[in-house]
Length: 442
Image (cartoon, rainbow, N blue to C red; front, side, top):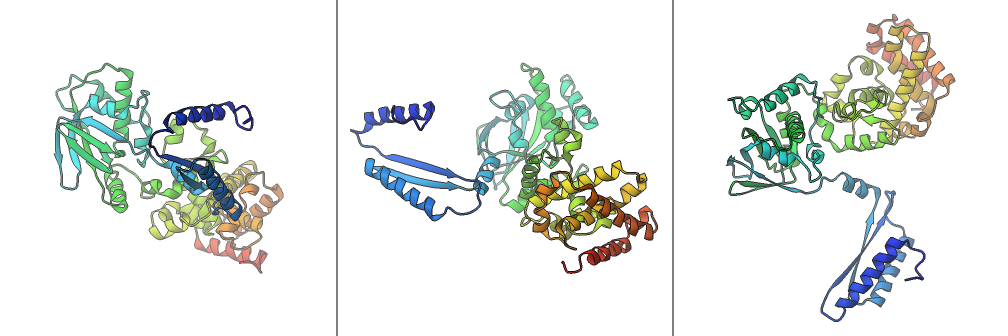
């Protein structure tokens, strides 16, 4: 072992332990499986040289330990990312007082608040945030009026009313739900409605660990047969309180991708509304879904009038939503768009324009800048995505100045007001100007 100086002490110790233990079982019947894992940030399949090294390594091990079953696994960036995001397939057992189950394995039950608080608490005494991840909203803070009412009800244990009479309860999705006596085993639980209640229950019982409360909470455990049903359940159970349609799509894979991508540029995507504020991220670094959408609508779709005046209308329509958030798009597109739009906003704020001018021409300047930087009248997804490194650094003020001047020219021609900025006529005139600047590009 002293010759293996290539490896650190932890690896050498592990090798020594293996040899010691293996020597003890060599004389008896046994099996041995050896697995190697090769990780890479690449999206490409392993090349011939890697394959040759794998085969050589397998052959060497078989020559040394003929009984060994050797396995080799490749982990590209997609597999690594999927693994990092996977919620562990945990099983949770809860004790209930009453329940009703259906043929598909779903259950509606009542359980004591103490038992629900225990279900929410990890072995380290922390809130199990992983089971709250599918919720479309984050915790809306202790100052939220609804949460204040929930907390007041929880703290008033002497009331004659049952807690579940006064609260809508909690809805979970699960892979499986098995009942044995008065105990329910839930496989891969995910809370999709009732996050505010869950937070308040956890906080109250976490603050007073020895608290006893015989009141009950209503829990619905749904075993959804397919992904579409899962999404329908999320939408339906969140329709009682104001949640925009596009916010219900926050659990789509693309938004997790965007969240990860923006972190590379020290930006925090508010995929779940209010989460980053609760985590005390700098307000200037938080990117909301609507603000990102406006940047994409202006730069990619070249609809600055809609980005300015009707972004939510576009997000609420399935066809235009898909044009903004498309699974096939390079995720650098979103980083480039928001970085570009924020530089445009900062540049306009520092200038001598009126407040109305800054507001009305912002997305026209963003569109002009995307064209100027790509040298094309209608840049596509990959062209804008390629700008991410450019937009992550200060953009030449001369470029921003030209874009501002061009947008102002059209703005003043069309009437110099908010009505003009929202008009399709100003948008069409702006696009004509861009085409004249880059006549041989599309």
